[in-house]
Length: 247
Ligand SMILES: [Fe+2]
Image (spheres, rainbow, N blue to C red):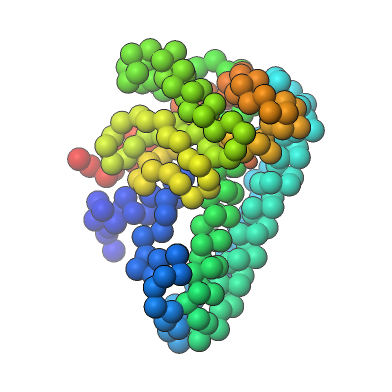
């Protein structure tokens, strides 16, 4: 069965960062609590696999091995474990499960799913030398006037999250077909139909062991370790997706 452009975008949205599920059931618990229909509404559980670090954690600049390994083994791994537990429970839901149980599990599924995916994107865009490379460098300059202006905006967005939690994401917006840097205050805020290219974790757990509350030092360290080859590869995939979607 072929998909329409809108259906294709919905599929892509579900695999990009921060998309709230567009369901009629909602997740706020304010709708009438309708029991789950008997039988076939439950999707079989397929475990989310843990992705190992793709770089030597001893070799990052300004981010310690202790910090990055703890982040991976505790925060990211915890999200994956919780995602799988939630999905196990969803797969085992009784046919007469009340709506508030379904909405609670679905809300947690979205939180843990986005946390897992955003962490995978974050770790995978580390381990480099921080030097912009490829078509993405040119595109940043063309879009912002200079890559330095893009970086200043990205850094300011990150600094605005200091002391709290959230993500900063350079994305290719598949809806408007432009590069944008987005702010996200938690795992479930983010642009629909946007493909993440560069992901920065601004939760305090990402830097507090190394830097205390000095988020600016962490942002400097992040930029020193960006693997721009990965960012450029994601940019290429985003452009291909946009081409497939058509105008
Ligand atoms: Fe994190």
